[in-house]
Length: 353
Image (cartoon, rainbow, N blue to C red; front, side):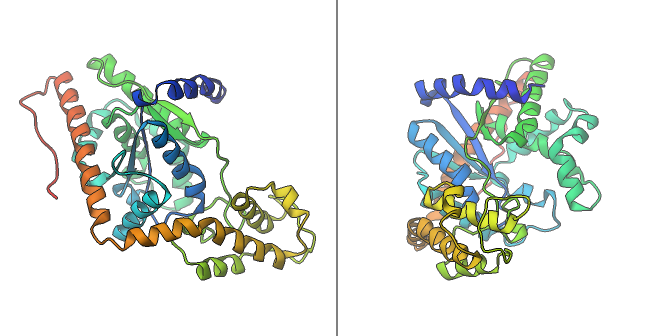
């Protein structure tokens, strides 16, 4: 397995290659629509997608709706979260004429690819995956087959569309390495069909939530992109701080203060330490954070509201994206079947609608 140091060392050359010939690269990125997208998504993954799109890279964004039930019993308000995710991508600058946005459940070939991929990985390898272990420990429940095979699902997503680049954080590298392993093992057993993708480490540091811990909708510490200014103010007002008047950057000792301070600093484009020196007490910090977030998101929210007025927009974007994703995945599945000696005539897997 590639070391983190080796991956980091490859980044300058990889970024230079992408900048030199962006149109020759294809990126797959996306998220599980478990809730509304939030400020952390915009600051990190979504802004990176927009940058790649504008540079000329072929970007595909998967809304992994099937994977919502990886660690939960039901997919609560799933259609609302998918619709909101599409609106937020468009409001941030993604262009459906240049970027493909699609739903996992609308591309059946993705799941058909799971069968040969599962034959190429051992149970022990799946149990060793850091994300599987972490999600299982956090759930407090028995390990489901879906959670255990989650990394293989991600590999199928990536390889189905022949993506050669996958933007990830350092904690997601094991998933990409398993994808690369599966591509090589398939070639060894059946013949070359897949090009092992390269991870593209994101430069944006992880934005903590309002409580100083990892920003997550389920923790209630995130600022949803679609929230109103008043809703944002209420979220910030409820954030827990401490009575000390002097504001300092102390992620471990003062997580609530740290979460608010880093959020305000991001939105204002300022250094947290410099910003801390200008503040006197938690009340001033909360006022500053509220104003900074609302000002920062004002343009996004206005564009989002305007887009939401078109009742057919989201359905049209997904229909176009689903059609392209199906074409790519069906072509890949056809190549897989051919390599495995299962070609009995091309089988179309596309769902109606």
